[in-house]
Image (cartoon, rainbow, N blue to C red; front, top):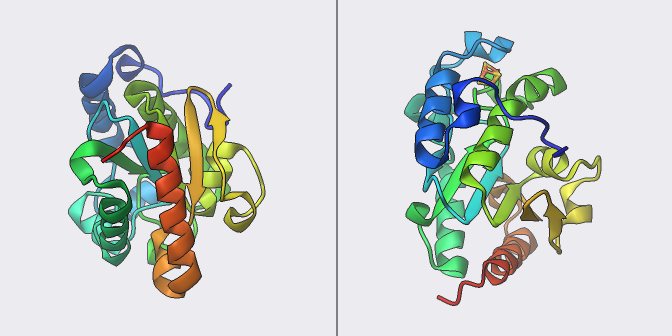
Length: 203
Ligand code: SF4
C-alpha cells in the first residue's frame, strides 16, 4: 500500500480525473473528520491541472490560504511560484498543488499525527486521480508521509525516490527558504531542476 494509505471511499473513488477531483473537493468542503474543521474558514483542497504530470505537496494552509481557499498564496507561495518559473519554466496551469492537511491549524501550529491520519485519504485520492509522474514534497511533513520515513528533509533531499507510480523529489518548504535564504534556496533550485529532468521537460 502507498505510504499515504487508502483513498477516500464513495463516489470520488470511482470517478476519474477532473470530475473525480471535483466530487472529492465537494466532499472535503463539508468535512468534519478532525477538530480543525471547527476553526477553519474554509477547506483548502488543492488547485491546478487535474491531469498534471507534476504535483507539489506541502504541509497545511496558513492564514492567507485559509482566507482565500487556495494553497500557497502568501509569501511562501510567491517564492515557490518564482523558483518554479525560473527553474522549471512553468506556472500553476502546468501543475497541481495541495497540502497534507486541508484545514488551517490554529496559529499555524504543526498538524498533529491524528489530524494527518484523518486527512490523508484526501491526499491519497488526489494522487490516485491526478496520477502525477513526479511529486515534489515541500518540507518535513509531506516528505515523511509520502516517503514513509521519520528522517528530516535535510537527510533525504538531494535525490529522487520511486513511490507507487511516481518519483518523489523531496525539497524544503518555501517558508524555510524564506527564513534561511542562501544555501536553502540554492538547494531548492537544484531539487526543482531534478524534478524537471525526471519529467523530461526541456523548456
Ligand atoms: S483537516 Fe482534513 S480531515 Fe480535518 S476537517 Fe479538514 S479536510 Fe477534514
